[in-house]
Length: 416
Image (cartoon, rainbow, N blue to C red; front, side, top):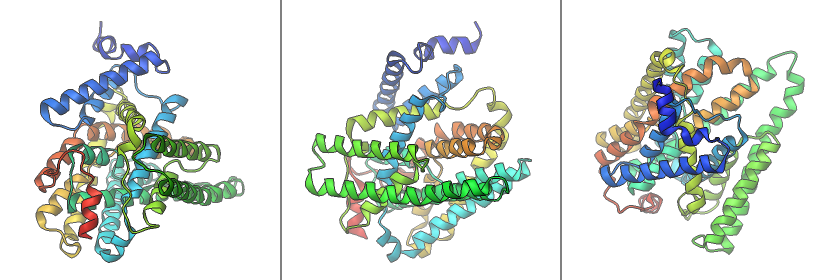
């Protein structure tokens, strides 16, 4: 029996039962939950590490998650929508008005990382379109990883709050930039621009309107019901699901809608919005499944061929983001120790980058072949180390002294 067959029999057997079967999915979730709990109790590492390890073993066993399967894509879209909505509710735009250097830091780290990744990708011989897509995706930092680690470790303080703000902002920049690039490519072709114009217009305007509608509905629910009540949480989850279904039916952005909904909701009032983490137990299961799926998406066959360029892109992206944070640390009110921690925390890439690449490849099939191996290998390199980098960077900043479960948004509101 070769190594791949051995891994399949040991860890991929549940998936072999059938990725769309209840038994196979249940066994995978149980394995990931158990390993996450062992990692947390034995090493005090984020449970996310256990989820990612299960996904990596599945990938090695040849059981990579296929986003073409409706069940896989539905789990990814819904779980990511919950996390992006939560990220949007953590971003206070009034804070950016009071501290414009924070907004300048976000723009600088996003643009500088995009330029650095584009230059590195071109130096490795990738075509301009693929390099541009990788560069724009590299602008984003994974809200999923950041929120999971921050929430589990109870991090609180200036670095944590700035990390949450930068994550929401650069994700918004990346989604809008990818949408603009895709629309530009469609509209620049003489044979497609007339057919593409209505679709592009509806996609941008519809995503904004649906996001505002979702945020308004949830604001109404929050005024009428106690959000600590389980029924209220399930009602919120139901409206998020409904918005995702509408977005997919109308070909809107499943990333932009929940992020804009959270932003709209948060900035309609001065008070912070505090949610049950990931919308309760049901959301927690979806988030677990999200991490297992994304960490299993890479291919062992592509890994050796794409390793060099993927490692280079990850390195230049991280250095560019850290350099931007350091350059603007003093004007934005950060000490050097805090700036070092914040720069280190901007490493994570995960589900958002995966979905951006999948959606771009679906609209532009010719871009998928050169794009996906490099991106998925980059994610494989980052996913296993980024939770630990986050953990130790926040510890270095002295922001892990809060009890587990502390919601850092409450603390930061008082300091703004």
